[in-house]
Amino acid sequence: MSLRAKLLLPLLLIGVLMGAFLFGKWIPDSLTNDEADHLKMAGQHLDSVAEGLIPLLLGNQLDIVHENLTALKKKNPAWTDIRLTNGTDKQLYPLASAQPPKDSPNPDMRTLHKPIAYLNMNLGTLSVQINLAPALENARRENRALALIIFCMLAIVMAVTVFLLEFAVRRPVHLLADASKRLARQDFDTVLPKIGRDEVGALVGSFAAMRDSLRDYHADLLHEITERREAEEALRKLNATLEQRVAEELARNREKDHLLIQQSRLAAMGEMVHNIAHQWRQPLNSLGLIVSNMQDDFRFNTMTPESMAQDVERVRRLLEKMSTTIDDFRDFFRPDREETQFDVAEAAKQAIFVIEATLKNNHIDLAVDTPSGLTVTGFHGQYAQAVLNLLANAKEAIIGKKIDNGQIRIQLAEQDGNAVLTVDDNGGGIPEAVLPRLFEPYFSTKEQGSGVGLYMVKMIIERNMHGHVAVANIENGARFTLLVPLFKEN
Image 1 (tube, helix red, strand yellow):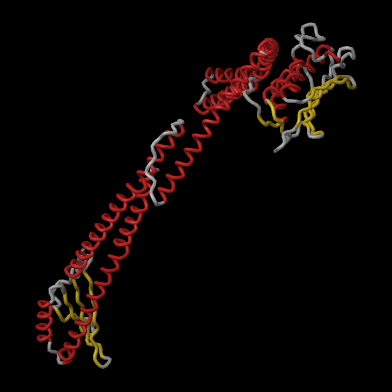
Image 2: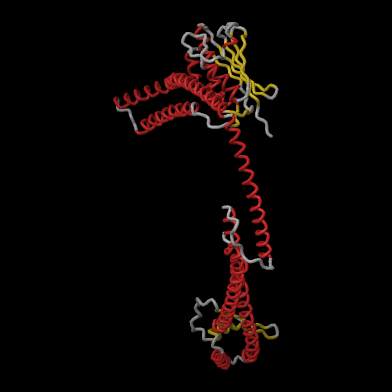
């Protein structure tokens, strides 16, 4: 919001509040008071008329009563209807044959009733219908004129205020804003408004002092930057040969890492396709049965709209399940962009999901004990890839040794501020002579092994997540351990 809008908004708000007060409170109250005064005067007049009618009613002089009320109606044009009834509610004036007064749509029409009594004797009731519109119209006209005068005065005050604020506040502040933008572009010679004796002048003086300080600081900074660039250039020339060798070595290592990661990804993707086939086998069988049932229903004329809708809904659910399987596998192999905090148990569950169908197909029992709540910092997808590599390695060991009751157990626990995940198998263990070289690149104990999987595990855990990988033989198998520091709030 601009400064001009901020200055005008309170004035407009005051105008709106005054208008709301005038038309919502003051004018209605004034009209109500005027109406009350007119009704009070009419009531007093009605009292005197009622007192004059008492002797006439006692003497049963109805003709004089008619003459007096007719004359009264002529003298008071605002009294649109006058009616007189006796004590038994019989109409005496006008004649009983006269039409009763119709309900008028005029909102200013009022009716007064004056009981006539003498010595506790009810002589009748005098009713008068009064039109207050002529009397209240003058009051309304005066109120509108007063409201117009007030609004004109308010508009004049607002115009004068806006004029003063425009030249005394907004223009100097606008010039200061432009000066600050030029100052941000290192234009230290920008023109400032004249320094006055008010608060805006004090602000201009402070801004000028700040500009001079920034000019001096900028000059010192340029001098320091020049000196530092000269020193860096001298150092660069001194270490040009060393930097070139280091850059070449880093490039070669990076290329090796890319090749290893690519090989691991290709192997994992082949495993993924195999697992998708296992995941889809049961839904595809179900789809075949549903299609066969639909064909039989059509052949024997037993198909109904309801059965068709049920079969289509079952097919749709199966297709959604198959699509979800593809999405889950795709999410698993999506590359990590940056480090995040993630739950170790969730990453382990993703790896289990990828290989679970293959394990069941090979009759390998998988026991999982991974409580949630252990959070680490690192790459979620890479950690899941490491767990998947360990599970695949255990599966291949069990299949290679032709173990009938293959078993793999995953356990997760906290130990000394670390998340410790172990993968145990009963695949016969690892020869002691091989253990020291097990995590070396391109080293494998299997004939068709690439030697990349376990090296990738070590690189992900130790280099990327600052953890530790260990392997040891246990009874009838081997145990791999992944240790990663837990995330701690600063």
